[in-house]
Image (cartoon, rainbow, N blue to C red):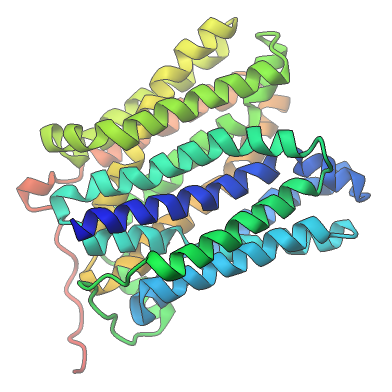
Length: 398
């Protein structure tokens, strides 16, 4: 019962965190333009944000292994509030960019939330717990942009003020109601780089990191070019494009919030990971040939359903392959790989769309998903002894 309460609290914390993030996304480019940013530099708001997450996610995770999940999670929430406030108060583009870089550092806390789940759930229930994080993400991305769009009617800075207020309230609530997991194992005091390399010697972890990188690379390329292909090939306006994204968010939320637990008990994480990656490949390959709104929804159904399956299964497998005292650091490595995918995916996809072929990001993304599925098929099922045994590590001093 206590574990369920902790998961419910964590769900609310992550949901509010992502709600605030989603609120500023729809108007951020317009806000930057209003502050005098040239079009060529606006992309740095997202790229810089992802770069900070790439660097700091494993650091947050490792620090939470050593000093505790609760204090580091609270600190990151407070920093998020400060970042959103800086966004709202920005007098020029440089200030706005600095606020987004700071927010990228602060919101690199997903590894802490995932490690918290690993602390309070048994291995067989871990995929369901990770699915709750995914459901919180989905709801935040569905509701956040809609709320941000409404607030932008007041001013382009209004979503930033509202996101800062939400984050501050989130921090206060978490301070009073979020307990420290009692089962957490303290991390050994190893240097960060040494610990990182130590974990990457594990063959199962290496494969999962590759899957993280490839899957996010393909999916983020779709996100970056979807509005273009929807407008140019399907003749949809921005309002209808937002409906499609909302549809994707709802499907992902339903899968991760309700279906992932029973499906994991029936088939196991490894099977769901492979199936989810294959479904995403099918959806990506179908998008360029959708033709209209109904076709896009049909193509996005397997894409969203597959994402809902593979993401929590991947996080669960990575958690189960890590040592108890290294949960935060290992999950942080996975999130860093995802951040690297979010950096490279949009750049490569937009260039391929513009210079190669409009369907290139989608056909290429489908191939990448199939390669990821092939890598995933080499992992052992948890009931067969989990993932491959790690390479021997030197004995640590007491």
